[in-house]
Amino acid sequence: MKIDILTLFPNMFEGFLNESIIKRAIQKGLVEINIINFREFSKRNNKQVDDTPYGGGSGMVLMAQPIVDAIESRKKTDSKIILLSPQGTPYTQQKALELKKEKHLILVCGHYEGFDERVRNFVSEEISIGDYILTGGELPAMVISDSIIRLIDGVIKKESYEEESFSNHLLDYPTFTKPENFRGLQVPEILLSGNHQKIAEWRKQEQIKNTMEKRKDLLK
Image 1 (cartoon, one colour):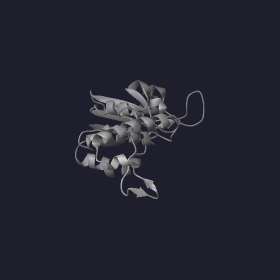
Image 2: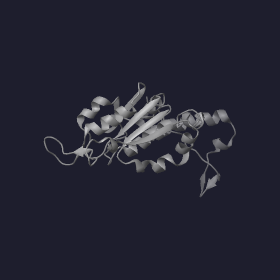
Image 3: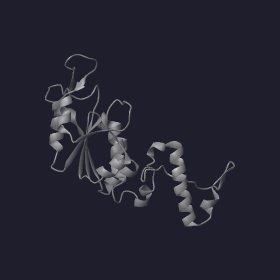
Image 4: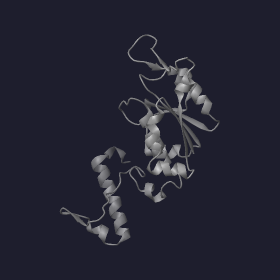
């Protein structure tokens, strides 16, 4: 998979690309990530990419030309172009699984007071990572990239994500490790029993219980 991220702040991605699972996935050749500064596509002498909004109003709006030119410089026939915006469809684990199947993603990070509306004519879809406002689309781009990359074959063990929260519309079950007793808090006896069938049944019941208590909206 190839992921191109269009941003005004490429340095924000240095830690993201050079640590942990993402770094290893890149080193293994399982994913290619390119950070493109769309300021370089500005046709103004000072590389300006924003301007005041028609009709008045506060703040500055990103112009269509630098963003669209940056998109078109990377776009191929199999590209899916995603605008990161609070107006987009809420992001979910099911969407991550869907995007994992794409060969090429272009993620467009906004900033300031938003985009020229005409940018929306050049993208495949809009995605939001939640009902709140951030200073830009860089963090959403990292969130979406991370959630997809970890699903790529060979990045992590398949069973590691197949039993996670949201994989079956349920939250995850509780997990414990050594010691068996921590400050009077005991590991459930069933997990020490060695009976894998009973453990599996307990975990499924705990998933349902956990979801009922914390995210009842997920239950079908």
